[in-house]
Amino acid sequence: MLAVKHSHEQYQNFVSDFLTRYYISTGQHITIVTRSSLVVKLWGVDLTGIVQLIKNQYSRTNRGAPPKDAVAMFRSLILMTLTGETSIPNWVDTLKSDPFVAVLSGFLPACFSAVMVDDIPADPIPGVGTFYDYMDRLIRKDRILYKSKLRKFKRKPKKKQKKNQKLDSSKPGVVERLVNRLLKYDNAKLPDNLETTLNQILKDVFVMPSLAMGILGDPDKFNVAADGTCMPTHASCYGKKVCDCKLKLGERCDCPRLFADPTASWGWDSYNEHYFYGHTFHGFTACDSFYSLPIHIKCVSGKRHDSVTGVYELKELVDLYPEINFHAAVFDSAYDANAFYLLNLHYGIKPVIDLNSRASKPKAVSDLIEIDKNGIPHCKCLGHQLRNWGLMSKSYRRKWLFPVQCDACDKCHAYSSKSFYTKTDDNPRFFTPILRGSDEWKQLYKRRSTTERVWDRTNNDFHAESAVVLSQERRIVRVFLGAFCCFIDAWAGESTLSITDIFPALSRSAA
Image 1 (cartoon, rainbow, N blue to C red):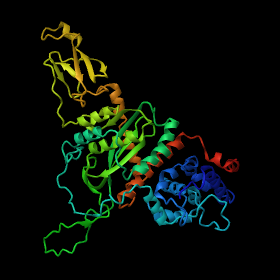
Image 2: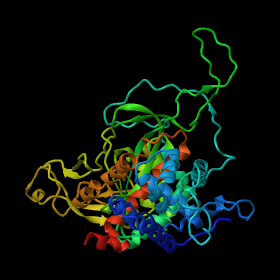
Image 3: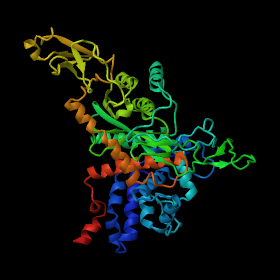
Image 4: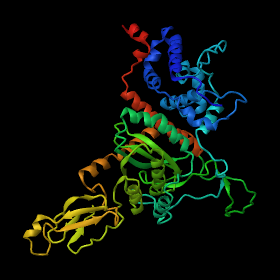
């Protein structure tokens, strides 16, 4: 049975005692000073809340060997990510050869005698297989529904898309059908997936404490932004033949092959303008936060369109955070679909979405009115913009008045007090609750780049993409570890704690 072995206060005492014993008492102050940022970052991070979230992945009886300290294992993986290490075997070797990272993880150093250690709140350094097994426990995998590793080989597409153009959805109208289904079964929650446990850890251990600190935004008026990123896999796209087909020269076999990553598929990277073989990670970020922090992450196949993923993840986001009142959500033009607007409005979220240049604009419902590309009505005769007279929230209508110049014009029968209405129910793409093109709309849309900064930090600073990982499950863990490190860095930026507060002997030696 999994339980909290040692409290966070016991961990702090253990780190203070052992680092003093190994480095300060022996005059090796420079080691702690040069690595002080790691000590300060992990010193105030209480990770004991993870035990209640993953205890169901362990045996409920006390039979067999007791499990390793789950908090220390989790802390060690975060420390590995912070130091830029991507290989578990190399990390275990580092733990055994470097007492500093072993102690900071919460493990007994390899050079420490194993005699009389019952009163020390730490476990010995685990092996490589123990770390891999622990990473598998962080993934909620349904082995009954888990896909077989056998599937047919699919070649790389030859047709390339245009510059900055997303890959079209293979099923037209799929967003509308999905939204209608979600609205029909609104009270039901989506089934658990691979990221369910990790998203719950992200919420309870990182997001909610950050919300209490005030670094994410106002929970009563919370703004989010969403976008995806391409994540190539290191698994082979060709697979391995397992059939006994005897082929002649020039013949091809269509039998299923064995793939190390059967969920990977070919997708289009619109930024680099090439096809990639792997997955797409989609995430929501707190766009009002100075630190650009993620609050929800979802992994899908590389070929899935962002608008389809956005429907699923928006539903998961609302169900995961019932204590947060979402005010606005910012998306790029890939989510520009009528049904997606209506789904946001159904949840009380004001969508801020850029218009897709390939989509047609609506026709004016009056002979006196024409609508520009931003959805703003203009007078046909004079060309002046109509005056915005506010939003009628109950009827989802916006009221417009003709310009005052119409009183001195005899070309038509319009006059300045004449009103014109646009209904958001008729075309929510153009007539949004937050007026498209207004200062509020522009300020919110500028914050959409927070998701790009999150993916940049996850892939470049914490090496989630460059880690040699073959399976989707391990890749998901690496991405979430990068997200956790984003929060730890933000907490360290808000903290006034210094290394001399933890080890006063350093300030005395410097003096």
